[in-house]
Image 1 (tube, rainbow, N blue to C red):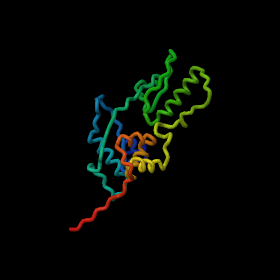
Image 2: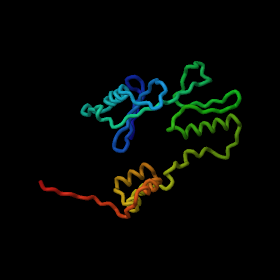
Image 3: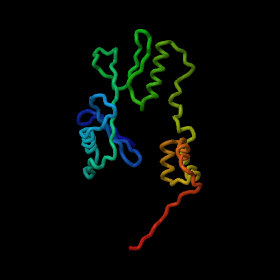
Image 4: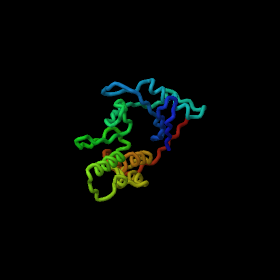
Length: 202
């Protein structure tokens, strides 16, 4: 389960998402100059850490040393040509039809691409009086890796490639049915892996 709060100390959004036994927390949102490989600034990392403290028990002290990784990117924002204030920036996506009839979608993010696609097609249907053969199917189209995935698929990975249970589960949960392709890049042992024990005397 994740958590998102749009009411932080300065109005930016903070989120927590569980990920492979750790937590992804973010995010900052500030103006920047264009650069090839934007690097997270220490003040941005510290802002996230400071905000995180507000949601945790006082017993839990999150320190800079607890950060395993940090990354940043540049998100392009678009101006709405129909807005009265030309300085207004669209933080989501925007669909616009020009005077010449060109339909454009701009902005948005990869996490909402299905909704963006559906809204764009709906706008095209309305603008150009198209006659669709049925309702949108995008909600039901499986993504790459989902077609042959099952909750117990990792067991067959263990049997075929001799993987440890934790590794097989990670591959199945991360790659879906494409885990077979990933696993096949290594040499199969044909054997199941059992835990090994070791005793010492000192």
